Image (cartoon, rainbow, N blue to C red; front, side):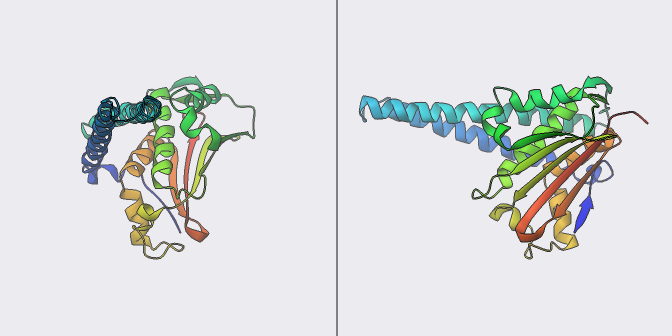
Length: 238
């Protein structure tokens, strides 16, 4: 089963911004909990060695939460422009290979994603006419969505394929219980359940940005409960 979504669906999905704010509130609650635990560990109730280990662990958790918070705030910025009908893709010649690799190798995101992102060059095209900010955010939205919805027992995989006419971002993951709850029949997602995937939070935003670049976004149900997300963006402006 396969379907797609994008700009044509987004105006019907204004609740997306509420979903993003819900995620932001969850992150802020997590940061507050970590701070409270650090205060507890520093109160002298634990040995110095154990306190140090626990504080370092909570500090690392806060760092990751702040990274995701910054990413979500950028989503809010984009969604605001979409709802105001003021978002345009400022496409310019961009070293697309370097752009996408820099995102994955960034110190903030490399610990999270670098091990399961793979680059494949099927052509020698390196320049694409894209909006750097929007394409970077599109890639991060795919990565964070896969991270949230993947079953922990199987590592997700995202292939960045530089083809003859377009760049393809193909992510495959085993759906966790949260993702499976959208369908009672994975494998073999029904059309209504598949539309639930498409309308769920970030998929509409991914599709919208792809369409702004004259590209496409597709979501496919694979055997054994796996989900494939595919974005294709042409190098050139038609």
